[in-house]
Every structure is written in C-alpha cells, then in structure tokens.
Amino acid sequence: MKFLAGLIFVLPLCAAAQDCKLKKTVDPYTKEVRLSTSLIKMDMASLSIQADSKEVDLFFTMNRNESCFNDASTAVINYEGTKVKATFRNTGSVNCEGFFHIIFRNTATTNTLLNRLITQKITSIVINGTNKTQTTITLTPEDQEKIMTQGDCLVKEAKALIK
Image (cartoon, rainbow, N blue to C red):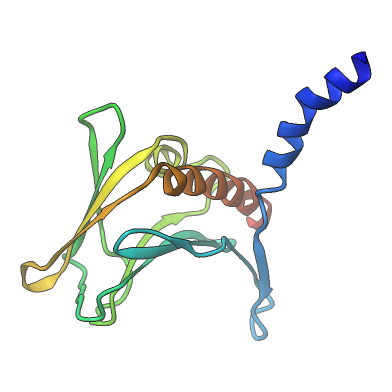
C-alpha cells in the first residue's frame, strides 16, 4: 500500500517531465543544431521558441497577414499579478507577412528578461506594427502554462548548444 501511495505522488512529476518535447534539426550547410518548441497557438497569433548556439528566438506569427513590422515595431508584455511591463523591439527583418521576432543571446547564464518571460505568467502581449497597427494577444491559462514549460525546457537545453 505504501508503494502505491508513493507511486501516486511520483506519477504527476513524470507526466510533467514528458511535456518537454523539442524538435531538433541540423542545418545541412553549417551542421549547426537548432532546437524548437511545438507551435503554441494563441488568440491572435502563434508562437514558436527556437534556439541555436548563438541565440534564443521567440518567433510570433500573426493571424492577420496584413501586419507589417520593422525595427521600430514593439511588443509590450504584461505579467500577471504586477503592473510591471516589458517592452521589446522587433529584432527580425522588415516584413508585411505578420512575422515578429524577439531575439536573445544564448549565454551560459539566462538573460534576466528572457528568464522573466519563461518563469512568470504573461496575461497579454500588445504588438505595435507599422502604420499604428496594433495586435493584442490575450493568453489563456493553458497558453501561459505552455509558454512557461516549453520555454523553460528549451532554454535549459539550449545551454548545451553553446560552443
């Protein structure tokens, strides 16, 4: 009976550990390994977190194709339970296909802003594009949990890619 009780307490830990399924690809030219999470579908956009030996990239794809972004476009992240906000610039290319990137360097110690993104619950993301277009992404508790678990897993695994 004690064995059964112990098994019941350990089983949720095993289930949580299995959520960390990353896609591993190898660039055919540079032979560099790239990790990515599965696509996290949200209200107005989708998110994929990718990493290689140099950077960790939060790649947003807007549902509206008319969303244009340049290097002056910003994303304002609102966290749950606090009035603190984080503002990030688009670090991807100029485009009108709805692609927005937030890129961090992949270092031995996790960047403070990246750490906050993957450890605190995000309530909403407001992405400001060109021509004063604005996309507000409201995250459900399931979305918040996916970003935290998959982001944390990816960032931990990305440390092994550093050369």
